[in-house]
Length: 549
Image (tube, rainbow, N blue to C red; front, top):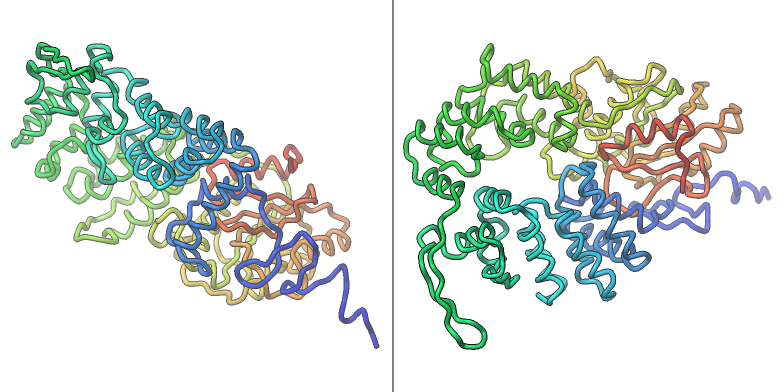
C-alpha cells in the first residue's frame, strides 16, 4: 500500500485542512481566517450591500457586525481610530459601514470604548446625512445617555454658524430624522449658545415664522422673556429660494449664495438655466451624480460649454483627490451614463462621448498615484460562479467579477511587464487590455462563468506555461474549494520549481472573513478590493517596501 497517496504535508485537497490554523469557508473549502482588524477594514471599505453568492445581505451584515465587535473587544481604542481614520481618508466608496461600525462602538460594554466612539462622531459624521444615519443606527445599540447627547450636541456646536446654516439647508431630513428631532433628543440649550448658533437653532426648531419674541419656561418653573431674533441672511435667502417659482429668481439666488441642487425646488430642477447656475461651484461628487440629469435636460451636449467644464474637472486628478471622489463613484457613473438610461425610473439621455471618455480616465485618477515596479506581474481574476453574485457598494452591474477586472486594469495601465488571466475550475487567458475603455472591459467580463473555484490555478498555470512571475495578484472572494492543492501550497511548489521568490497579493472582493494568503508568510499579503489606496500599496509590497505586520 502507498500510504503517501492518501496523505501529504505538501499537497492537500482544498476541501481538507492543510494547516491547523485554517477554517472552513462558506463553499466548504479550507482557508485562513482574517484577523479582526483585517476583517474590520474589509467591511469598512466593501460593506456588504446585496450579500454574496453564499450569504444573504442580512447574514453577511450580522457576521460583519460580529467582526466589528471582535475588533473592539481586542483593542477598542485602535478599532475606533481605524473606523474614524478610514472614514476620513476617502479610501471607502461609502461612509455607511463606518457610521454603522461607530454606532456599534458607541454601544460597547466598555465605557472607555464608548467614550472614544462618542469623541469620534464629528470625524465620521461630517454632514447632516451622516448624522441622521448615525442617530438612526445608534438607537439599535444604546439609549440616549449623557455621553451620546454630548457627542451629538458637539456635532452642532463644533461648526461655525455659517457652516451650520448650510448643513441645515442642504440636509433637512433623512432616515426619518430631521435636525429638529435630533436637537430635541440631544437637549442642546440654545440659550447658552452664541447669537449665530442660537439663531440657527431657533430656525430649526420653530421655522422662519418662529423667530419673533417668545417666553421660555425654565426647569425651575420661572418664565423668561426673550426678544425676537433675526433670521440669518443665508437662511432668509434659502426661504426665498424655497418659495421661488421662476427659474430667473432661483438663478439669482444660487449665484449670490452658492445654493446646491438639494436646496432648489423640484419643479425648477427641470430648467437648464438653473443647472447652468449650479455647475460653476458644484461639488465634484454632486457633479458626477448629476451628469445624467444635466444631459437629459440639454445642458450637457456636444460642443457645449458645460461639457467642456465637466471634462476639464474630471481630468484634474488633484481636484478629484481633494474632493475625496472614490473610484467606485466614477465607475458607477460610467456604467450608468454610457447606457443612456437609469436602472429605475424613466429618465433617459444621449451620452456625450467626451464625458464617457473623461469618466474612464477619472476612474484611474481616483486611485492613489502608482509608481511602476518593473516586476513581472500575473493579474489573475476569479471568474467562478460565486464572483457573479452580489454587487459592490450597491452599484447595479458591478459584481465582484466585474470589479476585479476594473481593478486589475489599474495595475495593467502602469506596469509594462504583466499578463492577465482568468480562472474558475480551469485557467484561461483573458482578452482584455488597458487600451480598452473601462466599460468595454466590464462588458467582456459580464457573464463569464468559470464554474467551480480553484484559487491555486494562477500558480499552477504559471508553472505549466513556464512563466516567470515575481508577483501574483489574485482577485477573488476567497471561496475556493475545488482544487487538489491549496493556493499557498501551489505558491510554494512554484517557488521551489522556478527559484523565484514570488509574492502573492490577495485582493478580497467581498467582505467575508476568509483569505487564501498564509499570514505567516511575509511574501503573502491581503488587500481589500476597491480600496482607493490598494494599487499603490500593492506596488509597495511588490517592491519590498511593505511587509506584513
